[in-house]
Length: 312
Image 1: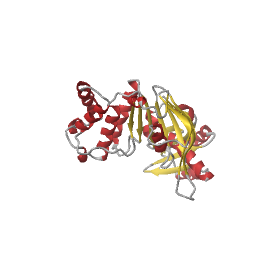
Image 2: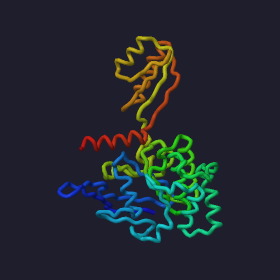
Image 3: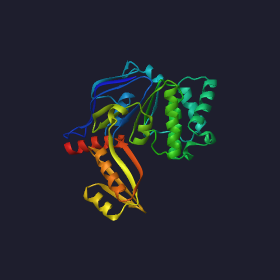
Image 4: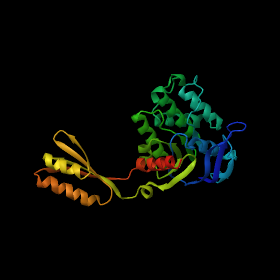
């Protein structure tokens, strides 16, 4: 659905000044029917990449294809839905009028527009506000109507730049549900984000870009693995000598009421957990809970960003 080879973009900083490299030799592939997350910190090159793919700016070098067509093919845009990070809307229109306007741009019939507008307004949770002017919408409501306009043409590929931005937890869940519904409907979704829990819940594959360079790409289970990164234990009824012994062994712990939470990390976690359990049981205490934690997307993301800072 999307393929890039050596895609790059430089911006001139002015006469005699060094140009700014926003994207460096990006090789990327988004497959049909998947939800693909494009991750990176602010200024990483996510929006620049999406703008090149949508034909809003031209790459300095490299090539890219959308739905099998080279960048610049106008006809392919009828098959794409796009929501930019900072969209501009005609705010004197109501939500219904706004979607009708975009439906006309795609030459939809009156009956098609009516049916799709009703369905989309319900999908994004704006049915109570369909006759309210957009100028009266909150940022989160504007984000929802923006996603609705990206779907008005029933696209094969949906490209969303920070779709969760400005949404409250309920709004984020509604948009997550819409994205999952799109995949279940056979659509391909390519979206950028830095809200990692949403990405972890939604995506089939992800790519991490830092300072314009692709740092990692793959399925989440491949990138995160099955290794337990740390184990959290909650103990109760242990004496002060045991707490002291736990601290002397270098384990992180905190006290909450009559309980103590201990975090065991690193290699040989099983042996360390066994040692702490034995200390607790020998002192007459008990283990309230023992929770293993696998590596998270946030840990992977922070590691890549940290590596880039060290190189810089």
